[in-house]
Image (cartoon, rainbow, N blue to C red; front, side, top):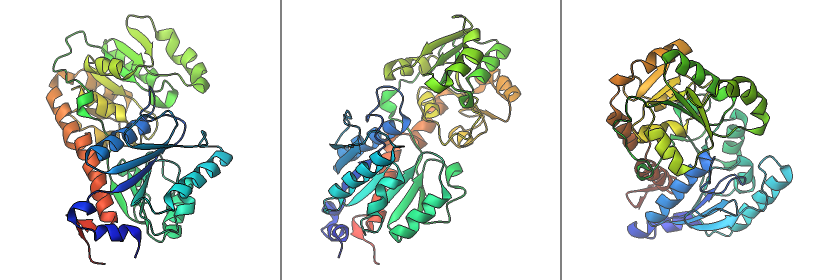
Length: 364
């Protein structure tokens, strides 16, 4: 009998306390100081699981300060084959001894490769585009012991027939965001994210100009997108109608989003989720976005913002913002995208993986 089934038989109270290994890519600490959406989710999950009495070990960047025990990756680059091998060996060395009930990976599936044949339950959460090949390979090599979750229905649409899939949205802790019921008549529109073409900051400038509302742009400019910034963004930044404030920390983000008329999401790619939308709505700020990727799943059209098919529709949406109840934005986050919802959802999946329902082992 495997180790994790033994714990399932150990009693109702004990069976609910799990020893969980969380993994995340090695480049950014958990939690991140600035940019790092996935790392914020892992931090939220780790803290929530520890609060609920579970033993959590996180494999992450050596500067991580999240809850639980930290094991630092020896390799710092996800795209390095050498670092991938080193990290995979580190993971298997700690896991294979039988001191964990399950492994939950937010990192590269390659790190799980040596563990796939083992009977230990494994959960792979996808936060980006999902490769059909990797899902099929992982499912076959694990003989069904690798389960999958994704952060939007959009991501799952082409792979949901392979293996076991669960949907768990991304989200935020409501205690980190202050609700603002009325930002005032002069509140600006806000663009917050990486300042690169697929995120649509140039469209945000057009929307603000056509609607006659000030725009604040916040976020980092990736080095390989500096030319785009110089060509399409910088010429419009005048410190009045369009302001660029650079990257913002958590405190500045909370203030910026709370004082916004709306968050603009004119994305030109298929957004897997877009945590910034949940952050904005947690502040009571509606979201206006193009119908790409998961945007229509996150935004309740005409209730917590507007979803449109083109720029013209986004401009028209700005003019209808007075119809949005900012309280409804906060409520939606509380119901779907808060830590109080997300952590128990993952916990329930863990219990299901271990064959537990209400503290009892399911019959085989």
